[in-house]
Amino acid sequence: MSPEIFFRGSLMWVYCLYLIGILGLSLGTIWGLFFVPPEKFQGDSFRIMFIHVPAAHLSQIIYIGIAVAGVVYIVWRTKMADVFMAAAAPVGLITTGLALLSGIVWGKPTWGTWWVWDARTISVLILFFLFFGQIALRQAVSRPERAAFAVSVLAIVGAINIPIIKYSVEWFTTLHQPASITLTRESAISMVFLIPLLINIASFYIYIAGVVLAGMRTLVLRRHKHTSWVQAWTGSS
Image (cartoon, rainbow, N blue to C red; front, side, top):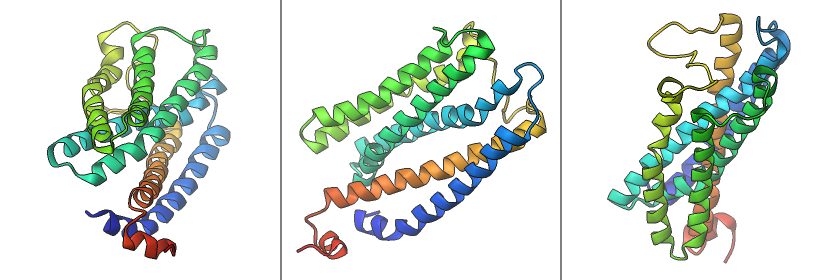
């Protein structure tokens, strides 16, 4: 897909994703924070789950998407793959930071400490620095093509951290519990908690997809500002 076709066809998608995502997040968050009963063992502190779990899941999905885009760029030199990587990395940095921060807030009443140096928290912290490294590397390399290639390589190599995050609770001794939601067995979370959680997860994905698309549109305008179609769109000469 050419940058022009992407730009002209993506605006309505951004609006729709924003609208659906915000409505869903409002519903799931209000439901989870105010209308579900306290958890049997954790009381009200478990409510941070409705923010922590979507942020933690999405940060990994964003990284996987960047790594796949990195492969596409290296093999086919697709410009839009690099645009996606550039737009998604800051969003991944923010969602990973949110996952870490909400985990710290949840950890204090649950474990009695703000932070533990176990495999799960360390691997998520590494994910945070991988996103930061992609942003910094892009800024440090002056030539855009070389920057895109370098970021692609970093993203692909760093993808080895994703299975470490996922399986760290099974491979190592950690305070984190195993996954409560899987495709192979019944959820360990009661339906009264699961429904608003799933609403928030889905809505978080939808909203962030809109954020990434909007970021890609901005980058397309910036990178192609001297082309006739961008000048016609912006009304510049």
